[in-house]
Image 1 (cartoon, rainbow, N blue to C red):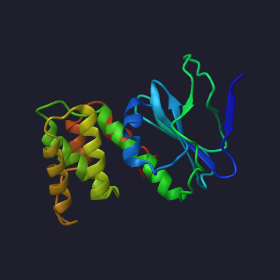
Image 2 (image 1 turned 90 degrees about the vertical axis):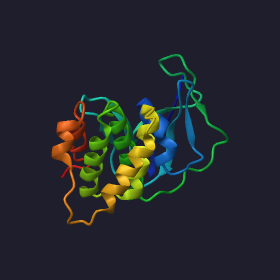
Image 3 (image 1 turned 30 degrees about the vertical axis):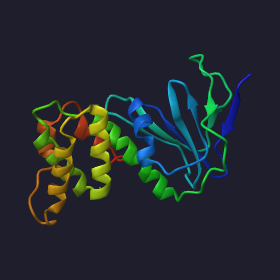
Image 4 (image 1 turned 180 degrees about the vertical axis):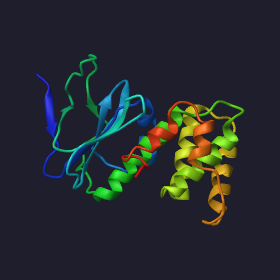
Length: 210
């Protein structure tokens, strides 16, 4: 008795699966008037028009799905009843999904997923200074801009309730202030310092691998 929306002919969905990505969605994704969700995951579905040929899913190293960019896929739509028993609802009056260039939308989703991975592997207090320097150094070398890095570390710090988040932002700025040829720490040092599989997750080709 539920309804489905088919993502075809340029219609695509961003499905924010993890709590972190739901939290970060507005910080990274282009605005759209086509937004829906359910009480426990408000604003977790965003609808756009973009030339995305096939679906992609960004996962953590443990296999947890963080966010999906869905094309040629069917999604449950409001006012369907989710298997949890919650009713899906549009955020507000439905507007036309905006057209977003494929590269722009894909990068926005990738940045949201990267922030989620950072938040899930955020280092404990007392070990964050060198960790953040190495993280910024690694991602700078792999094509992340300073503005993007600032947004990701700011959002990850908010999620992790880092009481010294301004220090993290200064660490990012100091890393990007170096000339390209100046030595900075990166993936090797981050692997020594980080908890879990942070470097491995971010080295996946869907993130910042080759």
